[in-house]
Length: 548
Image (cartoon, rainbow, N blue to C red):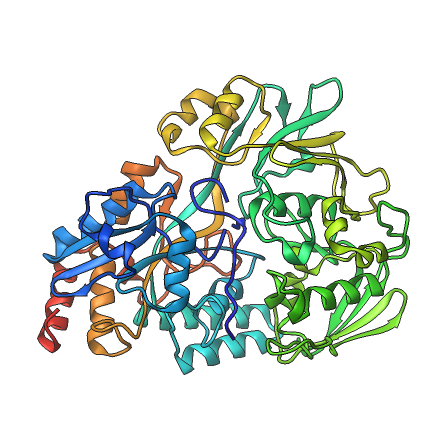
């Protein structure tokens, strides 16, 4: 499998999900005077000779923490760790994908759906599309497979914790910190909250505006607004509001049926889905079993090259090599269909809440590109207009049949290219809701906004990785010792306290505290705690095997 997972939000602002941005392998330093700049220009880097580089894209807002991590490692281990800048994310992504990058690089994850499996399998399972470190461990893979097949939630959660204990021994990535969802709102609105993945719950916001319209920030969507081909924050924010899936996620991440009347399985591999009668798209056409089956088949088709096609790989018939029908989807009647997976997946019902599994009306298949410019959905809002690079206007869908409360008449998304401008508009009450805070205001936004400031945990984790095939960092005793030493040499708490003003929390696992089953007492998690003495001892043990 060669797919590249793309999340919906870029860390630190424009982007997951973030959403959504790519599986983030970036860092942030703009230091053009660094000797590493020349290395980046030629796609090089260092992981030997007493020098280690940490690759990043300099168009991201991460300079301070990357320099802090490099300084912490350098000062503790007595080696030279330097930022390695790439001008653009695409340049860095290309190096990582082609496996030409030497040294460490920043990675991260924002959950697509609230499950430990999403954090673990998509990034660390053998052959996974986002496994940029090329990690492979049969015991880890077995534990994930056993968890997926388990019909007992508690047993599955325990297996995921065991899998994480294995990751903590191997450290294919070094967890750094969890990122909160932080932002704020104007004096014109109330009842503003962020959900489990750090996105404002727009439908619950009330406003004192005469027209009942909430003004929010967004970025220009990367592509036409088609659910299976939208996986960045600009478009994803809209998709999530205009389409309703079989299930939806509550603010806390719990899952409830939405379009589905029931989703039943006895083995986590074969599912029967019954759809509630009476659902319609905003053009008046009915939502049926075909609305899901045809949409998923279209998104999965190799020749369509949709960005979220990998979400369908668990369904029987999916192929990365040729156009192939999802033979695992079978229509029983207009309101019933079955799903057969290639292997058990205990969290499959959770996955159905992700935008790739949205239904599409018949009219979409007549001209998908045109449809994506003026999409027709079945969610709590509908698209009134999309003025590219300016605004996207949504209005309340009077025919919405789901369980979400819609407390306003619509949301107008103003397109911004930077968060400083958006934050200034928020302070002036010309923007009602802001979903992130620029780095320039992190130290002051809570005092400036007061009760209107939002800062709460979200399903986002920051990590750094070194490919396990790199010299000195392979899956052997030397490699494990070096990764553990680097992890121990990073003073996470000091970095979070000094740079991020309570918007980050030091990581104690590979997932997020907002995910069910999370624990801060996993066996081996002490390797994520700063310890100068232990870090030096581990590095010395590695040098006894082979000099760095």
